Every structure is written in C-alpha cells, then in structure tokens.
Length: 381
Image (tube, rainbow, N blue to C red; front, side, top):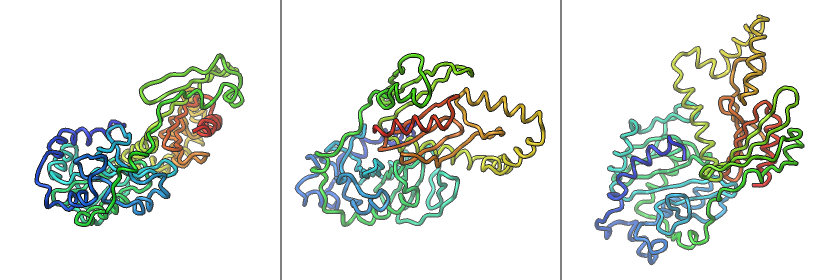
C-alpha cells in the first residue's frame, strides 16, 4: 500500500477498538436488518458492510461485476467478519466501502489529524477544483479515498482502483447515507465464501521468456535475473553490448492493487501541478512554457548539443525526455493491450491489467522496446 494511503488508515486504526465496541443495537435499523436476515455474514457480530450500496449502483462506476459484493479483511482477502465490502469488476477494477455505524465523529476526528477537513470543495487528481453537493455533514477527499460523516455514521469509500473519482465517490456516499434507515435486504455470506482471493506473487521472469526478450532486445548476456521483494517480483534482462554500452531492462510486477498504485502515480502528478506556485512554472508543467523554451533553444546550436548529451544520458538512466528538449515526458495515455498505461515524470513505463501493475524500466532500450516487453508481460496475466 502506498505510504500516503497508509497515513489516514494509521490514524483510524488507533480508534478501531472503540469504534467496534459494544452499545445498544436494539434501535439501530442496520442491526435490525441483519437480525431479520438471520445473522450477519459468517456469524460475525458486525453489521454487514455490503448493505448500503447495491451491485447495480457499483456497476454504474465499474461496469459488470465479476462477483456479488463480498466482505474482505485487512490484507484484502475474503473474510466473513471483515468490515469492508468489496465490489470487483470483470476487468479487475474495484470499489471498497468501510462504514462505521457508530463513533463516526471520533473516526473523523482522528482523520482530521492528518489534514484539514473540507465540506463541499475538493481538488481532483488533475488539480481541478470540484464543488460537490451531498447529504453528509463533513467530508474529505484524499488520494482516492472519500471520507464522509453524517451524524455519528462514518464512511470510508475507496475508489482509487476505479474511474469514479471524487464526484462518483460523493454520489455513492449520498446513496449509502440515504439508505441508513432502509438498508438493503442483502447478506454477503454466500458471496464471501466463494469470492476470489487476490493474486499471490509469482515469478516475473515467467511473464517474458528469454527467447521472447531476445526477439525484442537482441541476444542476452545470460539468463534473465529474478528478484522478489514482498508482494512484488522483478526480472532483469541484460542485453549484450551493441556498441553503445550494455542494455538492461527490468520489469517490476505488483501482483495486488495495481490500479490503486497506478492511481497513486496520477495523484502525485496532480498534486505536483496543483502545488506549483510560480505561474510560469505551472505553464511549463502544462507543456506550454516548456514548449516556448524549446523553441528558443532550437535557435542555439550549443544548446542543441547540450540537449543531445542530456538526452543520451537520460536514455541510459532510463529517464524519458522529449527529443530536443529538457522536458521530462509525463504521459498518462500510453495505449496498448492493457487497461491503463503511463509514463510518470519520465521514469519508465507503467501499465495495469487485471489489477496487476507492470513497471518497465527500459533504460537505453527505448520506449518502443519497453512497450513491446510490457505487452508480452500482460499477455500472460
């Protein structure tokens, strides 16, 4: 999980015991709905988190679901006593909702320790400010999570692995709050029992064989080199020296929450753009000021020689710059046989398919060969 997403969760973990402690449930419509259903999922004494948003409502932002909504625990595995409901689409995208049916003010207070609260004005990942209307008392949008409070009920809607964005999350939060007095007659026990588990880490070198890599990069100096770090695996392909020095291409595979990791990269770019104070720098970031600078440098032969050296060094370091320019390439629309692809701040190629992210550091091999390696890798997911 990205460090920035861990911050609000760490703050909330400190009050988890309080939020799940006792209290009179006899007048709670959520508890009454569960009692009518016979029990909550798997015999847990927690209210089912899947009774506030329907399958159809989630599909509005995800497309067709691969499975009925189900409960998950901390590591994202199906869990009959989990406090989070997951809605998983056929393409691997997902939505998650974690409701706190009491002590919500305490939860929102803990979240407030990591940033100021907002009510209706949100800054999207692209730096655009959106004004959102909703049925909540307080709300906050942060790195793909929409936190909202109404009365003493608190919702954490994680849409970072979807295309819902802040507007979609706000819409879903309003639906959920509007359903507090009349929850869905749904029991997620059966769905949780048959829900798919997240992928386990596998050998990244199995995604692109030596023969396939050589067809793209040329002869290799030895077998591909595997490496594992936590839930991420890597594979490095060392191509022989073709006259410009040896080429090393590394693929790093994140087997869980690929869309969330990708969204985190986009959020970083959005935060960077929104945080640029100097208007001239903001223009350069948007590609306008930078283009004007490139035109001026194009008139200077010495500047062009310098840019040529810079481009050569950047290529060897695996950093992508615009030809004849000092601008790093940031492109979040790299098309290919994947759901989403991007280059973030010139640093390699990132692609996602079936919630698995493949990051290709293509170095001096160049972007086109990097895309060919990525395409071969995702074909086996």
